[in-house]
Image (tube, helix red, strand yellow):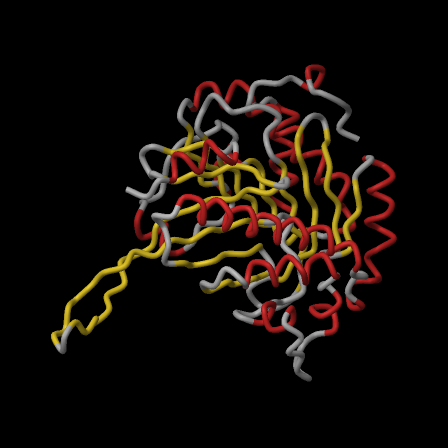
Length: 328
């Protein structure tokens, strides 16, 4: 077994004994280490082919919200190495501040196969049994993610989204949130709930609004509520499920709850009105990560963030007067 327990202790990470991987926060970003599949090589020993298996490992560090520079596989290391081609987006090149360039160069010096994307950085390597090397690799991967997050402040808002800046600025002032330019968005805390509202690229290539609202405390009941059901889930799970006792919402939502009676009790008339507002606005999904809404109109941003926070707090049993701060 790779000596990753010692690595977790050394770096102040937690160790998942079941998955046998360390994970946690370094430089403010979530990082994890996982074993890959065995790779088989033909090794020649005295003219005889000896089949040898080598297990790879992957170290991944995430950044959130995702960048919107559109990195493709292998592009970022090329930029860091100074191999700039005419097809690179100026925003991709502008992201590489001196600290980020140096951090990527330091990571590349360890070898392996680094991949850098809008969501963070990962490296596949073949030295999972060297604990000192693994610790160094985790440190450098996490540091690259941190430098990417810092460098996003250097980029302006995309030209095609500039018309939305006044609306986001108004919500920033109203709710006391922190603005982002890459992507255009806002992050912060509303009524104790961590929130983000960002313009990201949808699967069709267009930008759309994403609102994410986490829970202010860990939920004590399991929930999975969605206003849309991916086709593969429709095949796996027959409709349906639980009911809130509200005909309008029950007709439009797929609802699964660990204790539906508790959920019904916590979602009173005003919270159900907020649910209805969110359902009308876009694609709603609520699970253990919180309230997620995609495709809504940015003109109603403050109203939707407030509704998402009220629903999130209600699910964990917090009444409006118990929330850690105002909703609007």
